[in-house]
Image (cartoon, rainbow, N blue to C red; front, side, top):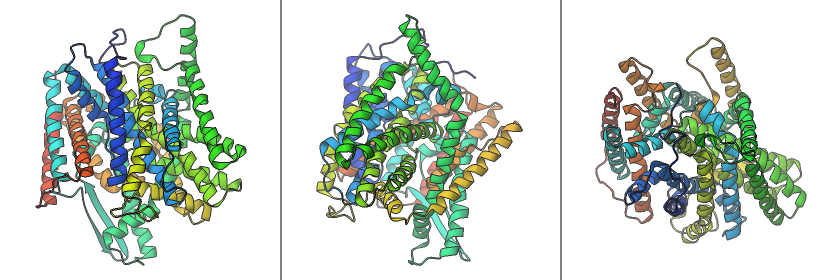
Length: 628
């Protein structure tokens, strides 16, 4: 079923406007700074696309000449700030953990963040047609953002499910964040020598993601979690026991985070390579189409507005323009032109690979759940092995690895966000070229505030376990993970067995998927959703799976394949739930940083489960209704 854009290609509305530029840049800076601060302070970031779209709609209401494509441009630029912050906080603090810095030079972070993030945008330009137009990946959060924009533009029956979903999602997030129930309900028990864990995040947004992506993908994400938590962890604990006397819950989580999680990395490496091999046709066609479009325009021809990407010759020139200063930066830091040149080559090749995987995974599980840290670990492993093989060792080798990974990580984070924004644009009928330019603009402006925010946090709190630590030091868990993986490669202490097991699981899934394809089965087993399920906590996969089940139930009740109709009332309701939780997440981020977050003395996880069940019932009843 071919999707018709909300604004047809033959109709052109103002997208590049002064107010869209100003509002997009301001929100990019605010979202970037807020998420860098929150990510280091509280160990989390919050998705910015939908909050930015809602804020933009509210502000643009004051203008008579507003339109949906202009609003889409604002959220495109603003969401780049949030994604860039995630890439920055995952990698740069690792240099403090490794003892290289106690405070960051402004130029180091700004150059790498701005150029690395912009490379992520450029890498996705050849992937847009493959992932969005041909593969038609679901892009759950991109779809939700599009529905928010369309509902705001249409009003009436389209707005009601999103409006009510926003209220329910926001209220549920507020009560949970206030301590009325835990963010995760979980338990672990020992049966003989084996540990068994079950848990679920209480999140309206996650069940909504499952509803939007459908049962097949939702099940595969859960399957990955089941492999890790129901099979791998019990077997590992049965073999090693509990030598440190941890509680059962801590034992399960520590085993997963320090051992089993690397199975997900191995599965992602193989799955990512296989995905690119499978998509080599669409990707090559995308490159060819881009070159032909450039030639066509140069000869005076025209393209459909909704198919117009940045010209391929401009893309290649910008990639070269961004790589040269990065090469010079590496040469300055490392002191070797040869090593710096190799680092730049690795960054280019692995950066494209990582950005492609991030763009694909954003289409499967959304940008918020995109395992960018897993993609970064993949790049760390490859880079560290190459540099170690060339004779680099100790702090020098580890710093070089982190600096390459920082570019790849920021690029992957922005790539996932860009593909999600382009999916939103595909639905609403935006011009891809204009979105791509705005994404780079948002990235550059957000990069300007990354270093000051990081240095402010380091001066005020420091990072736990380092000489910078002060009272209430920041945990920076992702940065510690990157530092320890890099250190493990150079010291020879990293456990490769788990990576190899994950790779083996991926190969088995690939074989099974090919068999199912030959038999014409509707159920398929693509590797990447399973790899994500292994890498992410099981508690995220459970609500996604539940949401997928409810999508299937709605389809059964309606007697049709509801997945084929992307604008049904259930998807609108799910978009509202995601929007409400995201907006309340932004509000609570500010309250946490200001030490003003409310706290409810009474706590009941059962109440949280009951209310979430009520939200699911509402989502089901909404989904089975027809909208005009």
